[in-house]
Image (cartoon, rainbow, N blue to C red; front, side, top):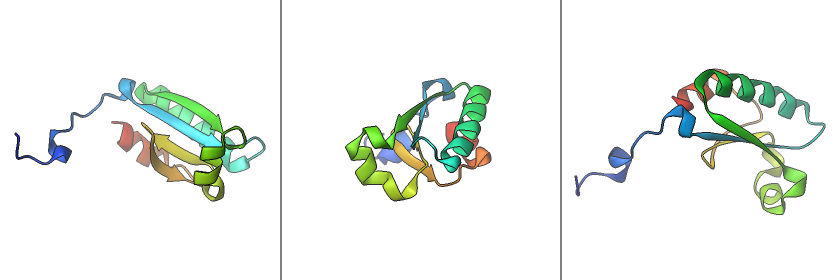
Amino acid sequence: MAGMSPVFRRAKKAPAERVVTLVGKPGCHLCDDAREVIAAVCAEVGAAWEEKDILQDQALHDAYWEQIPVVLVDGEQHDFWRVSPERLRKALS
């Protein structure tokens, strides 16, 4: 296993161990749509989710301002603008 790529050694997390983060801002209709999709998919698979306001975090603002809403899965960018429930479900399972 020592010579195996880290990609293949990585243990797959259960949905309950995953965290989905919605990066958005108040008054954003795309953020509202993303919130509905994330809440439904996370409830279905048992994953946790949180929301962060891009206006309250300069680092998030600098990184994602032109892409909101942005969806992170375990801190890694997964999607932006429109959230596909099928794609999110697949990433969490």
